[in-house]
Image 1 (cartoon, one colour):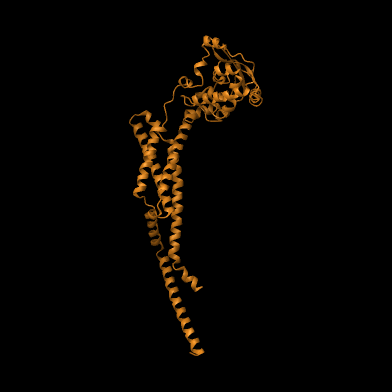
Image 2 (tube, rainbow, N blue to C red):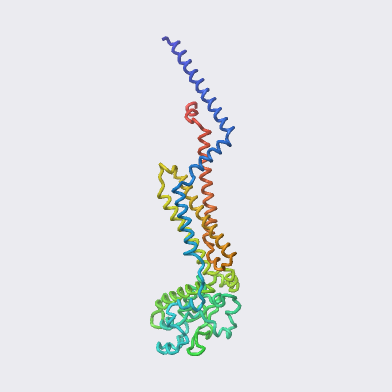
Length: 401
């Protein structure tokens, strides 16, 4: 074959390849046009494919029933609203309550503590040990303009700052360590006591809030105390404060919300009348915490059962996990609301104590976050699959270039 024949053969082959490429490109163009024309149907098919991939299996349904059972048991056995004891009954749980009755004169004499007899801001450890917390009295307050009046339902628990769940850890502890009481507007008074008929703690004279804090600081930092036991006094005062707060939280009137009483004691009482007190906040928090813990456990265990050969992609499996959590929360919350509503309508006034407020809040949160997660995964799946449909044979285009 001479040179001319070889060139003609190469030209014929090139023209053939070019025509073949044009045919493939035309075919791809037709396919893309067809995809564009039937885009809605293709998207519907991809959505059905996604729903099939994320449909709950028998294994998932078993997890769903387990999650619902755990949530319902939690609602009715662990996190319901308990009947509150009266203040006197709750006070029996106070630290060393059996030793601090201010009217028990004989016992006071035996202990050498007929009454508080400390130097100002500086009671002994035994005196702190055997007396009630000083901010639990309002006796004698009329002599000082009744600083504890007008607080409403919560009374002195809203006006004595030692009862604030947060501020009380500072001021209440300092009050115990110095035998004083500090009001919501940070006025302070020395507390004394007497025994016998009409005995008990009472407001004796005005005190300096600044000196109370200074004295507590000296005890803590420099160990200043009647017997060089300032740090021991402060440690025990903090323990006594915490125990006292805990006993009050679960009493009938409970405690005000943190910081509110320091702004407006009347507002703190008004909120408590509408159920916004520390007892209810604690129960709602417990409900929400337990609900989230169950969700985490179910999610973790379900993830451990992932099998790529049977369950497909990990993302679709995560969607199934989210569906289990979401459905279980919705079922448990709906059943709880229906139970409380029906039982209350039938005359069971105690049924409202079973209302799962914290669980309802968790369900609403899951409803937003889980649906958003599933929506994002679905969007990613649709984009990926539609891209494959549109692009087709990518290698062909790369070769043509």
